[in-house]
Image 1 (cartoon, rainbow, N blue to C red):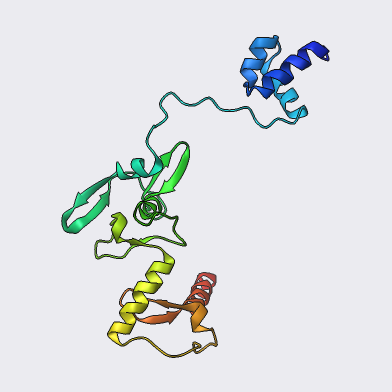
Image 2 (cartoon, rainbow, N blue to C red):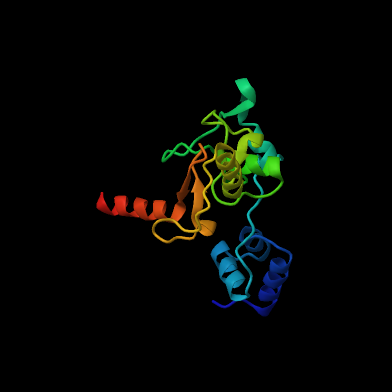
Length: 193
């Protein structure tokens, strides 16, 4: 049964004010599914969610730091939950999941990381903001180590012809390798398994 023009006008006004489908149903005497149909028909997005009364007032950075505890040597240990797949430290903030290292990196550097974030110290599980580096930071630090240890190379290509300017990476000990060759080898091993 079609709604009266007056009811449709009332629904339109309520939608413009940001009312939920439940509020529209209560105000107009229609059911929630009809309110949802008119919401879609009139071009409004999904109904807004009511904020949870237990929603955290902490920022994502503050919440991340509530799950760490200092350990010997200036390192920080993660006390929150981890993924089942590989044990990555994670937490949820306002219905979104974050990795602890990416947020701790943001705390230290004031920007979002590029690529994976890893601890560049000797404490494997460290999440201390000052001990974390993203891909460009790791590449820079390891290139400096290679130069200091005399492991830097002047080659412009690897043995398979990949440009070292684009694909050179370094192991934690400063040894250089070709990232493209390593990726090809990994794909080959996975295909053979």
